Image 1 (cartoon, rainbow, N blue to C red):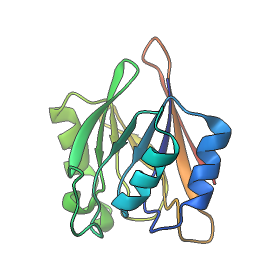
Image 2 (tube, rainbow, N blue to C red):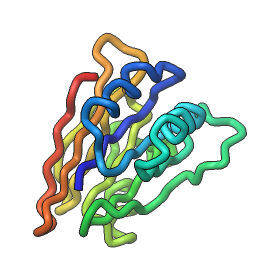
Image 3 (cartoon, rainbow, N blue to C red):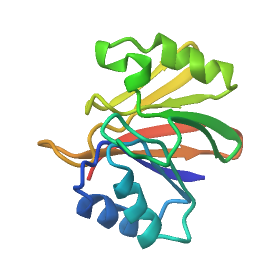
Image 4 (tube, rainbow, N blue to C red):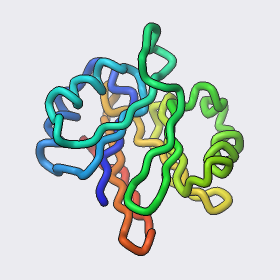
Length: 156
């Protein structure tokens, strides 16, 4: 199972859409800022399941603040991150939230800085900014049939 994970697109969607056309993942995840950018993914790729959460810049949103997403046999906890103090470099509350939901992956955005590490047995992932910035990035997540998780931060 292959997932493309985007965050903080801030209305810059062309590279994101181009990347999805090129890699054709099994699922799409958008971690907020802006919800309407997730809607662009939904409109452009109706055949690919899309999971999204709202970000701190999504004022009148319809997306949840957190969600649990199945990626093959593994569950991922997704959130924008602003409610978990990630902008202060603290990932413990995010990791605990993932553990409480029995998730193997915790995904967040908000900081615009890519992150790919493991804390307490939880794979922690921030795709970075998929919109504005010198080097827009996204995350490519692959979950093998045996539950093995591979994460790559890639340039858009």
